[in-house]
Image 1 (cartoon, rainbow, N blue to C red):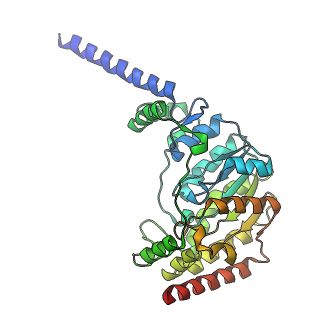
Image 2: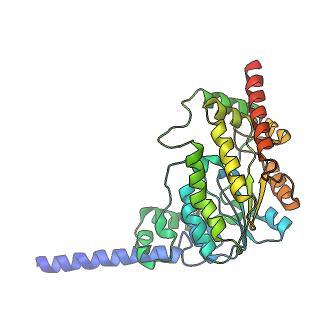
Image 3: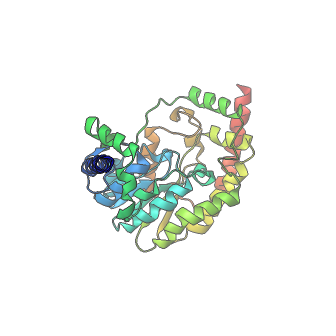
Length: 333
């Protein structure tokens, strides 16, 4: 009798597990097996399936600084078929995993990539690596996963369409920038358990991930690297906590080592006073308006705001001046 109950229990468990796996495979919330026009909106879980199964020849990638960039606008300017493969709170570990996988698909011919210093200072790891490979054996982690089940149900009930993917919306005002800056400098700064703000560490993290992918894809992928516009308050925040020179040395390291590569074009929007000092274009010290999304892409298309070894030092000097002027004006308010 006990043996019969044990067998029946085992059969029930197997049937339930098979049903769960079958449901996940059928719903395929992360598009691991086939393309879908419905999305769940989780970048690190969803992008590998999208990269594998969708049609594109270009990508815009980076941190939250490029999440609001419209692929349609890029396509209208460059004539590409673009997907936005950015990550909220991007870390260099994200790109160490994502870039080789995306390039391996053999589709992407152009990558617009924002260089956000936070990405290379971060020590965190956030990727579900089992989704970023072609090993079907570890798909069990996809099938038997509460988050997968939750997202499968979400996708069926309330799918997200591509035009609404990964966007965030917030009002841009000078007052919000000053408020964000005041709160930041009143805090403890960059937690050393999460960030290593030393320029050597940040440079090494860039070289080992993005830099490696750039060099490995020479002759296959064109890279448009750009330093995205922060507000002047961001430079002042970095300087307040003693890291402005580390930030500037990272910029110089990347320009000096990558601007002359044959598959790279580089752009700098961080030293243009008219851009970074218009605080009404920002919703905190870092994140800018949709108008600046359009402006930066348009400038890259027509070759404006180029950066090279010839002007990196003068651009860095301008950032120092912008930071000092903001700090002075802030204390005079």
